[in-house]
Length: 561
Image (cartoon, rainbow, N blue to C red; front, side, top):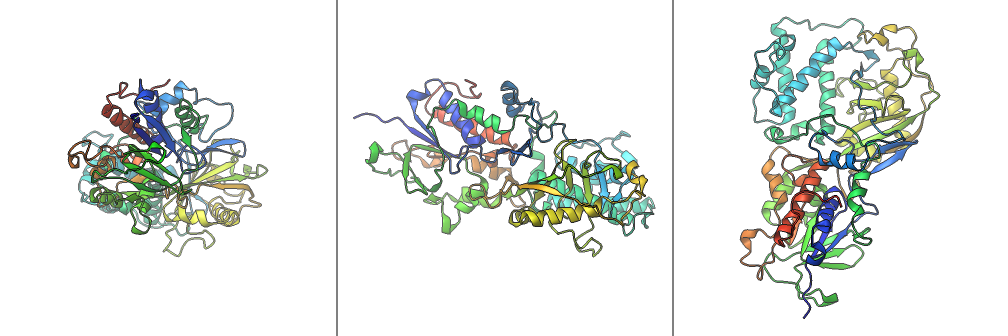
């Protein structure tokens, strides 16, 4: 009888899946050791990495940034394959400017003296939550007479990030009150009062943080786990030739046919009790995992690395659409339920290049930070839709571009997916009209004075094209990336990474085949979740797990063959 090689099937051709495939395939002796196959439910590789083009520029519909270049495996690959330089313009090619134009609703450009104390407060409180703010008696740490460490230390800790930040703002106001800070109306700012304005600026930074974390509401983001999250040091950059160039490199070593597109999984049968599938079909004897596909086909495997998103797993553990048979064990189901998985979408709009911004003394549309009136205040412009009020910025994708970009998270990200191009253009136009005054009279705006003019609308504001991502409604993703929600912890991320069946449940290899289902993806990494490099690390981890199981060489680093 011919002994069959063990078969490894990787579900998903995104960063985690292709990293694992690259590692397994290029390992010394792997061709003799096992069979390898990658099945992808969509019609492209890349997963939540999806580089595209819009109006002649290279853009990212999904993953956008290398979060810190020092120590990042993604940056290392991008350097080696010369992906960091391009003749074609690309999104954020000049990074974000240090001097955004912060404007309050109604067209009031805000002086940095108003914005900076609030931005510093927000930044310091986030630093404290992330364990980066240390106690200091230095003058530097007491900017503007405020000891931020002391202020943050007094706020109760067993809270969500959202609650911690809001209590921090209240503590700041109490401090100002003690210093007899003026609370009255600011000249030239219409309906805006100082406290109202500070809250609006603070909300703007909260909205930016929501897109960073994918938590639609920061009150659902766990405080205690925030300090476990790790970032690489160094600048954050985008990839000139597109994030997809990293994916294409990982896939380039795999032989033709190893990646099968359009193979969407409907069910994964596995054997926690040690009884094997007795199937002679195509010689598939005693392989413990059986994959069912939506096209009606099946595939047998000894090991399956599941790299689908946490959003797909959340749907997959529901009774009416169980992805696993039998169901996953309670510890795994509970972790999937408790962890957060949010929606973040990007909106690109091409602004008519004929529009003249010279009345604002600007060559192009500015990098605009928007401070909105609260939804429930009754003070906001009625034509600005609620979904625009939850975004924080509208900016060119690079300094001289006519393509504008805005980020959306949570409910407004889902709302964006349901809107027509016409509805989007109408909502964005109404918003811009309330933020950039159409007037020659008010030259103070150009010097970032807090005086403004709110009695005009922009003439003939035209958008020629619209493009949006739709991660929330895509059944292959059901959202964007994971976060540690209130009620969960880093332990749940570790549980996500635990292979099945648990080693303690296996008496021996003959009665209970080990490592039937392995899990990879950003939601399985305790300290680098929500990132492409977290997905990369998880792919290496699971490939190494199988290589060690079969005593193959080459465990650890990714092979660049």
